[in-house]
Image 1 (cartoon, rainbow, N blue to C red):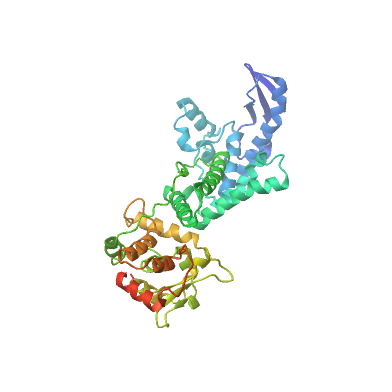
Image 2: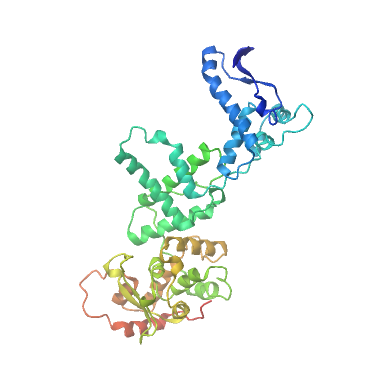
Length: 429
């Protein structure tokens, strides 16, 4: 290996091993070490040579089927020609002479083009289809500096919030390729958090931790792996006063839009059933997802649902344990699904994301403030307008009465009669 001075810059000069002749037309290479210090040049030269060899080896190996490996190969190939890998869209901003230099690199002495190196030199290598969970795995590899000096316990406490944020996001949106994530996906995750804040009396800080850690993982992987993605992560965090607006769907909107023939046909059957079943029950989506056949009592004198904890699932609190009479279109839903909704039983978080995305994409949200949860508020509003007693309203919603409870609140049959007065009728679409 020789170090040669050209002008005021040291270069590496070395013959190309014969085994690389099929992928490297030059007999010897000159590579700038970008320093005028011989001492620095001597330190940098071995790594530069290793990069050249890696690039030639990559060209001999051909294309990898793994997207991440393919991009790493492209970087090595570009480096072997004294270039840095740049996506094609970034090359458009380069001066003309630099573009021409890249094209000239691909010309072999015999007049043919080095087609193996062309994608790396011209930046046309397809971006890897890394999923969200794979991005987290890459994140640990890319960020050892962030845990340097931490104890095992400190490392665990640093990692766990990031694991939680990614797990929650996957539960809501799915383990999708990060290159395919859209603004709607991130807004669905934000909406899911707004609903939790309202229902569980959490603070915006709880959501912001997830949103910030999610953005950090995805942006870090994007930047350090050179994926060059356009991740729409802006303006997701919540202000301290933010909470889910309890905006109900109007009765007319429910009847004329949500229950119109064919409107919900593109939604999967179980998500559609849970959504429509919510109209006259006001249950929480997670409560519906957890229902099993023994909790759907259609053969009772008063058909009803039993919302209760079981050995594998908790409910929000003691007052959430209740019986809800089935009336109107909600009764039709459970006649069609007497055993519940196995698709969402173990993954209730993905339900709201699926429903909210469908309603938003198909113009079925009454306003920008509406979400799936708005049907629960519609049910509560109809009971209020129907002058149903406050105790019954609170019991059916699973809310605390705020005082000692006496008696049975009129019984199940009485509650069913009250709900029948305000129920929205219709066939399950």
